[in-house]
Amino acid sequence: MPVHNSEIADRFDRLADLLEIEGANPFRVRAYRNAARTVRGYPRSMADLLAEDVDLTELPDIGDDLAEKIRVLVASGELPLLDEVEERTPPALSELMKIQGLGAKRVKALHEALGIDSLEELQEAVDSGKVQEVEGFGEKSEEKIRRRLKKFSGSEHRTKLVVAEQIATPLVKYLHKARGVKDIVIAGSYRRRKETVGDLDILVTAGSDNDVMAHFTKYDEVEEIASQGETRSTVYLRSGMQVDLRVVPQVSFGSAQHYFTGSRDHNIAVRKLGQKMGYKINEYGVFDGDKRIAGKTENSVYKAVGLPLIPPELRENHGELEAARDGRLPDLVTLKDLRGNLHTHTDATDGHDNLRAMAKAAQEAGLQYLAITDHSKHLRVANGLDEKRLRKQLTAIDQLNDQLSGLRLLKSIEVEIREDGKLDLPDSVLEELDFTLCAVHHKFDLSRKKQTERILRAMDSPHCHILAHPSGRLINRREAYDIDLERILQAAAERGCAVELNAQPERLDLTDEGCRMARDLGVKVSIAADAHSTRGFDNLRFGIDQARRGWLETDDVLNTRSLRALLHFFNR
Image 1 (cartoon, helix red, strand yellow):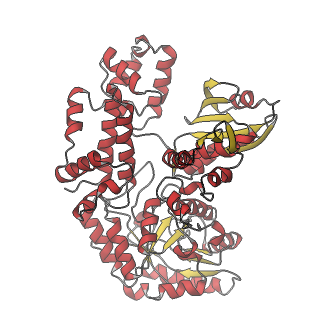
Image 2 (cartoon, rainbow, N blue to C red):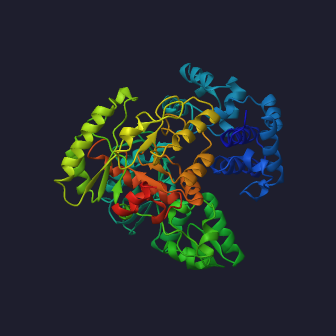
Image 3 (cartoon, rainbow, N blue to C red):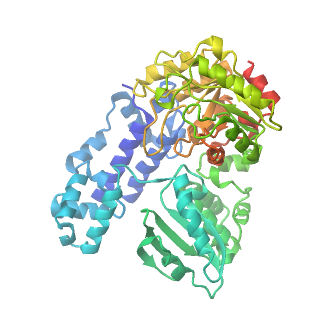
């Protein structure tokens, strides 16, 4: 069986956890964590790279030793060093470190005092009151662990971006009411618009006579105040989310935004540029000796190291600094660039609103065209359309188009890709459509080879114009099915197919890495709301976030085209 990038990354992460518990050199621990991040996020498999004799040391954070470990993992499926460490340190201890507040030292203390080797044993110890008896813990610590165990789902807890927004928006509104507040910015992964958020980092500027911290800790959603100071406080909200609030001086606001927005790797790379010029860069500013030469704005920070402002969505140290230096930063797509939506459901299947209501909502959203893509008959749970019901809908679309002004409804369907790769409806009805959206909604557990070939066979059809939500994942709920995405995208480029970036916040499928791979291969991406109600078009902004993280420009996105150009694309 092939060893996938995610498996390699998971091994490195577990090794890093166990080494940290053992008290290994922090730089060694960090090296494995960095390698895991590089491998997990890389758009091509390590196995394919090795088969092509690619030098893995050319990848970020991969040196000779790590490259050799990856080679062994791919060849044998084994990581000997991890096996050695697991013989002396129970591997399940790495799971304990995923509980908020349990670092390596505390996990080690619980293991040595109580013999706790697993989440189940930790739960038993909490329930029996034994944790509070361990030196360095106590009754309050035990209660915190109990609450956090309850919220823990067995994997690292990260909040979907849309949920984080729902938490952050009223909090920011509340903070604006504090005395003396001037500016408020949410930094971190939230500002970089990652699909999930670990915690919220909020930066505030305020006058000297302010009550920001007192006001913050009195927020009615605060469940626990972890720390409170004059310039920094940390709380846990009832949702379980951690919020760090910092009051920073106006003269340092730009450098603070840069520092706390991250990513860490991006910041390190910028600091190294500064060091080469004799500057010190931190959250307080850019310093030439003791003199602050920049930091009031983010633009000044980048300008100090000879770079233009880099959009937050690109700050992952994935080539953006080199692109900025060479004048190759992408002109990222924006919401206003979208002219239409190519994935929409009505109450004919599993949507909540009728055809006319969806058309009206699209007009109000400023769209010029709207594709109606209800499900096909195989998806019985969604009351999918058969040929007869689809043709009836096509007639209704024609009639409504005669009445509409400024909006064109397009005839389409989200047709199911069967296990054998055939489409769920015959060519005789599909040829009556403007285009066809093709999707997988069943048989997610096929092997990588079979799932990939299933999709490739579907794309061989002249009626497969867009591949919808290519991996089938649901964030924090369902893993992506196993496919060779690069092979699929290469086939899409050859066949003139587009691929969808499904903008539903629980999908965001393509990933940002997938978007960049599509861009590099010349595959057009449809940013689609997958709207199931009149409110569903708001999803498009989350799709834009993901597209920008994937370096997509206007021309990379299918539905930035005029209606005429769009129909020309489909008439391949």
